[in-house]
Length: 369
Ligand code: HAM
Image (tube, rainbow, N blue to C red; front, side, top):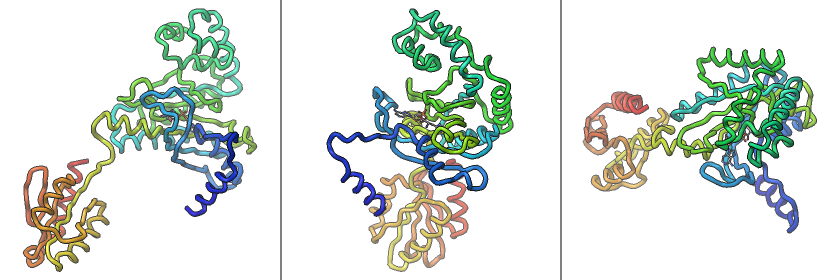
């Protein structure tokens, strides 16, 4: 932390008005740079890296699209481009979204070919776009020259029927890319992962090749991609590393993920307080302290009042903290070697020994999951 602060301080001291400062728009290129700079190709197996942090893009802000936003990303770098790696990366993502109870997530996949087959396809696309040029909007007209693939991204209503008739990359993949793509799909099937093929999924960044994917989620309006990623086998070489190194990864838009979970009004990791541990009397405090440790070790979230409170006030606070249970430890409980547990959902109250108490809380946790 101290080191980071010093680093920032020395960076800030070098700034003066008029300096150009670059804000990172994404982190894949930075990860690849770090991989090359630190000679990570000598590490055994595939190198798996992750990052979390703010990114900056000069975009027109709207719901789910900000100039500063957050990403959680992961990259796999190594000598293999086996389709099983693509599928495993996607499997990890879908599993994470499932755990977070993100409902309605849809996985879109595509292959955009490689340097052997894509240039010819892009030329074909450009030729077809030139023919319909006058029917296109200004952005698409410009992209005919700059990057015809991006026309496929267009959301303009009147361009949709035109785009529907454009040549599709799937029909122009070389044999090696086609085999790779077919195997990615088979590997997803092996993992029981449902996907939609979307031939228009070309992605906005230049480094992609072969597999591209995006996951959409409900409640986000037009900016509905919570995650995007793909394969970028040439990038390590482009940034000065070994030509044989391959890469694939993704970034989740953290803001959009949270927005989608909030719009659904449910899901998310089961949060809140499992147990409010109300204790009364000095002897009960030490019993409560040791019980709280065992409860926390078992993964329950516990609120333990630091000072003794009156019974009514203590249970009132438990209620206001939206605790699911209050566990009460007083003189009577200590004498009998039991705990009183109150479940707030239905007001029911029971006296249980410690083992039973844990079983009871476990059952309640399972019912909630
Ligand atoms: P990306 O599709 O540009 O990919 O961004 C990934 C995710 O970041 C998007 O799906 C979206 O959820 C979120 N995002 C992007 N721009 C914004 C914005 N302006 N406001 C809010 N959220 C946004 C990449 O960044 C690649 N680096 C992903 C990758 C990693 N590919 C390979 N490895």
